[in-house]
Length: 97
Image: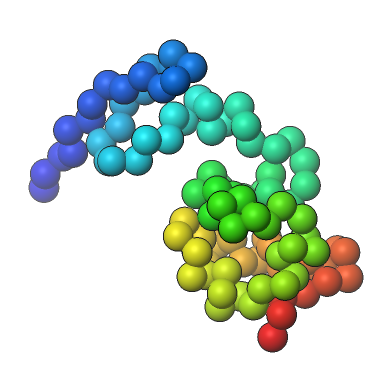
């Protein structure tokens, strides 16, 4: 079994963190920008960024897409779909068929 070598990095805001991947995202900054409420607050950081990168910030925006299309977004996984479905249903919305 090989272990990944983690490198010390510093983000633009000065936070220091270790990463073993090429991902430039600072965990501290990501936690600071996580919404406190709304459907985006239910998601993991990669899933939230996947939606935000596509301009999806409201449930009405989300309802324009099918589940299959959402799963195509980089960072989005199966585990997020039940949370998204439930949030849509609370507003009387659903994914496009």
